[in-house]
Length: 222
Image (cartoon, rainbow, N blue to C red; front, side, top):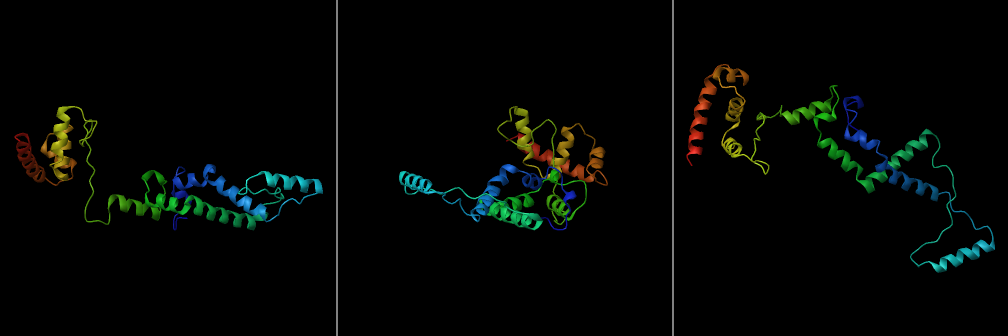
């Protein structure tokens, strides 16, 4: 189902594995296949004139759009490994026609999360990490986090001082936001901030702080 990747490359809670074992999803399509197979066995014949008379009587009582039939003849649905494999493929096709199976699988494959993968390396995991962390992109994605302070203005913001910080952060670029995050978490020495952010010296931090001060003055004086 996923080329160049072993089943062990995915976690036990992988959505596709969960789908594969979800009887609530598969049973309706399995029943549909079983009914189709039973129809090939034919129906139980009428045994005598009394049954024939009763059968005709019932057909007259029901509405025209209702079909009255004799019971299907029972029998094996499949026998042996080859027939079981053909039955499986047919059930998958029915699930795809009536339950959008391939669309579901494609949606799972296209919207992976980190928890879908095991600790083993695989091409699928590598492609996922490239897509998430933009290894092939010239633009580096940086995650900025403020502890105990919502970084985004939202409906659950309550305190005036938080709203001030949230609005101000919207004026800063990524480098400046990272510096503000350090300051908000009690890291105030320029040298220490430079080391944490991976700069060779404190010059980039000093220049960014100067820009931040100007933006802060302009923002608070509005």
